[in-house]
Image (cartoon, rainbow over all chains, first blue to last red; front, side, top):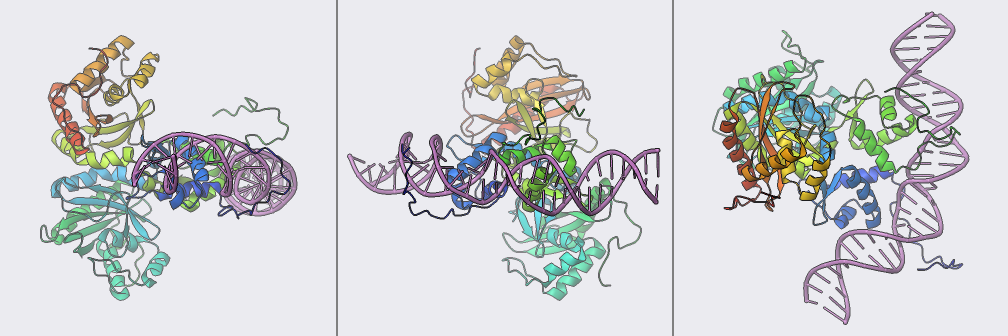
Length: 276
Length: 276
DNA sequence: CAATACTATTCCAACCATTGAAAGCACCCT
DNA sequence: AGGGTGCTTTCAATGGTTGGAATAGTATTG
């Protein structure tokens, strides 16, 4: 124990690395370290990925564990806790829509026996809120809680088509990302597609990875007529033809919309549409 | 909330009231304010319920919103954000079990067309992880993300019966809570019931509120043979008799267990059981 | 239409929770 | 035994944090 008040003890003081960041941000960055691939992490892993010293990480984690945001496994690793999940279940755009939509998703699922998806938009991506899949269903690209691109998925196109003009322009201007298995559309075609989606209430996309599938999606509106979510079905390419699926998907989406207080308009275009 | 000023507040000396609490705890206490009844809150509501000055609350909330843990509505109120939901979806005991169990829940649901529930234990309560319900199903007491007592629900009894001895004793010693609609068991009977649940793999409870229902639940085991979740079905009293439901519920629960890596033992008692 | 009441936001100087290097433990592996 | 890795505790310096006060905005009332 060095308890001697030294006078000449300025031992090459290293700069405090990342001091200055708000505590909450640090705590949240710890949570953000968790991902599909990283569901259980050790202290040092958390500290490393969140870029902070181990003692700091430990202190923050201790608080998070005490509250229940994280849980500690027997082997010492940390995982996201049920308490956090519990609070998160109050997210209107998370479990909120889900709760209302689920019965209709189930109906659609039972009839078709194919993947049924529900997603909302968060920033520039679609977040998968729910997915019903048969045990023996074809492989599917995205998991619940995961994110999907807006431009290259049916479920994303619907959300993009329903977003405010300004946001759409931002995305449209962006150079197409290259994603394997889907053919990205040039800006012109994308514009036309979005317009079609708005008009018909249906988006359709074919992709070849991870397996050859066709997706058909339709928008869910809230009471104000805004697109709040997107409902989609994914079937193996070559099984049920899309034009047969479309009415079922649209009907399911409409049913959910109605349940959200949306008054189906007599007019064809419910929302602002750009050009004819 | 009756605003009683001088409850435990020290002499109003103009001193900092509650300074000294870790920032994270405060931030988390803000999250904890949200509940089934309080899904959208104003700044002042949040500050009031979390017991902190408005400026402090605002500052913390700002960070939470920036990260996406909270979202701000057009009317200025705050709700739990999708980003938080996204991270929470990585909770092994939350979405984790759910993901694996869902297909089997669906099967059970389709066959029976009654409420199918999935829950895990968190502390002294059961947390509802999933609930499948028909659109026209009977009213049910608990919602997904909500909590249910261990002693007076079938789904809870299963979790209690599967908990470690020490925890069980703690609960058993506790005086029975009075919950309307269910008859609480005295300690002796409860002990016998728990033992039965362990032996048979089935818990059954009848309740009269919010409607007359019968619940049948069965444990889900992980690879180590520990009870990690509980699967239950809730039917209107007088419809399908419990002894008909039991096998179906047990089978579904076992199917999930197997999927979790549980090796069904030949022996009857898989886990430590107290006394015969 | 002013008065009242409430909520939201900005400011800022005092202050205490926060910080991370260092050192001590506890386990591996070889 | 020795080297390595990861976890935990300690502690003094410090800068993020704090909340009263003031201001602006908004709804309600007389």
